[in-house]
Amino acid sequence: MTEKKGTKEPRKGDRLAEYRGRRDPRKTPEPVPADKALPHGDDDTFVVQEHHASSLHWDLRFERDGVLVSWAVPKGLPWSPETNHLAVHTEDHPLEYATFEGDIPRDEYGGGTVTVWDRGTYETEKWSEHEVKVVIHGSRVSGRYVLFRTGGKNWMIHRMDPPADPEAEPLPEALRPMLPVRRARLPRDQDAWGFEFAWGGRRLMAYVEGGRTRFTDGRGRPVDGPAGLGSRLGGRLGARPAVLDGELTVLDGRETYMIFDVPHLDGRPLLDVPYRERRARLDELDLSGPAWQTAPWYPGDGDAVRETAAEQGLPGVLAKRLDSPYAPGEESGAWRLIEVSARRR
Image (cartoon, rainbow, N blue to C red; front, side):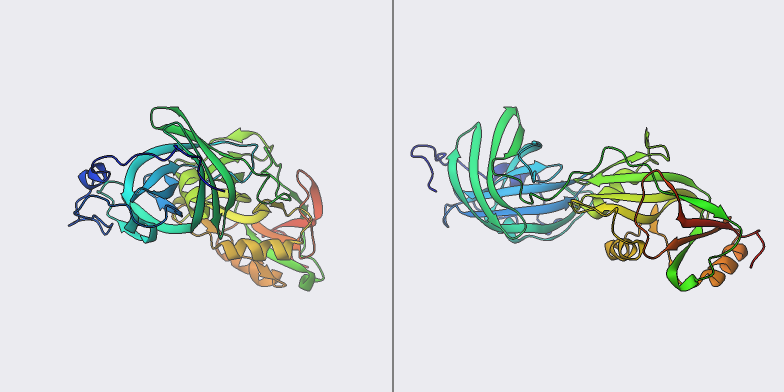
C-alpha cells in the first residue's frame, strides 16, 4: 500500500523544540539531540513503548519527516474493531527514541520506566492533521489502524481489520467466585489435592485490562478496591487482560490482596482448566507487590499446612482438588474449608 498523493505533511521549523524544552539532558537518560531534526530514513519505522509514569500508558510513535510523531494511548492498541481507545497526541520525539529503554527520574517530565513493547515497520495510507491511516507490522501487533482527531490533542485509535485473535474473548462483566463447602477433616487422598491457607478476609474479584483494574465482591457486585491497588496491580500486568480471584486481608499490619486463582487470562476463559494448571499459570505471572501477593499453595501436604495455619493464627485451610474446574458462584465439594480448630482425623 502507498500513501495517497498530496497527504504528506510538510516539514515545520524545529520539530523537536517542544521536546527539548521539556527535558534536561543532565538529568534524564533520554536522547536529547542538540540540533533540529533532519529527514532521513524511509518514514516506515514504528514503535510502541510501555511507559510506567504517574499512570501506565503506551506510547505509539511513527517515523515521519525526521521525527517520531507520538500519541499516548492509556489502554494500549485495541485488539478488536469493536472498541476504540483514546490516543492523546504528544510532542514529536527524536528518531533515537525508537530504541530508548530506561528509567526517567520521577521528578522529571514523564518520570517512570520505559520499555519497548513492540517495534517494526508501517505503511502510510493517509496522513493529515485530522486523520492518520496506517498498516503496521510488528511482532506483537499488526494490522490496519486509523487515528482520528476528536478535539484538541485528543484522538481515538480504531482497528480496521478483524480482531487480531478471533478466538479471544473479552473479560466478563462480573464473575461470582467459586465457594468451598465446610468440612471437619482433611481429605483422605491428600495426593489428589492442593492446600492453601484460609486468610479470613474479604473476597474480591479483580478484572485487569489495559493497565486498569475494577473489582466485584463475593456476590458479583461492583465495589471499590483499596486506594491505589487497582492502578498498581494493573500496571504490573500491563497489556495482559486477566480476572483474578483473591481475598483482601491484613498481613503484618498491612492490607494485602492475596491472589489464589485466575479464571480468565490473555483472552481465554480458564473455567474448565484444572486447578493445578490455573495455579501454575498464576504463579508464572509473578504477582508480588506492596499491596498484593500470590498466595502460596502446597500439593498433597494438608497436614503441614494445617499445622502452620494454627501456628500463625489463621482460621483454616482450603483443600482444592487438583483436577477441579472453576465453577463460578457454586458451592462445590471440590473445594473444602477445614477450620484449624476442628478435630483432625
